[in-house]
Length: 121
Image (cartoon, rainbow, N blue to C red; front, side, top):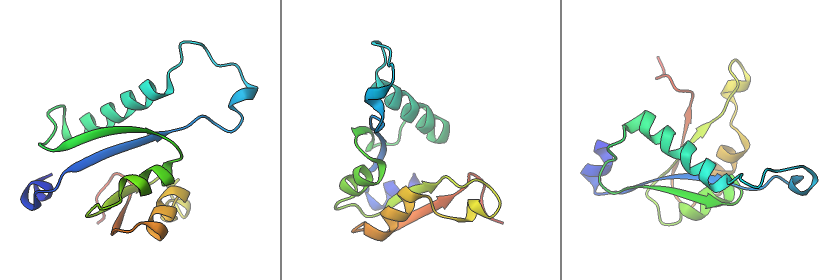
């Protein structure tokens, strides 16, 4: 977060959600609100990483749509797009996921792909 303050940059934490392709084929409870679930997930994740006292200029954005498309749209004019790579450990953990791969290929700004949750040795 210090880098964003030093450079005067803002940070947007973005989560995307969408209804699955087969959505109409299954039962969904009336009370289900996927946007609220996504917002709760994003808030919990950000609180785990930076705490509940957000840095100045940080926004939490919940967007409907496919992950890569939402991230690419939101990154227009950005200094950098930072994405995670899901990975599954071992060799598969070294591979890019479909969203991070698409973002790295099509973003109009630099893309940083973060693998795992532990610092590299």
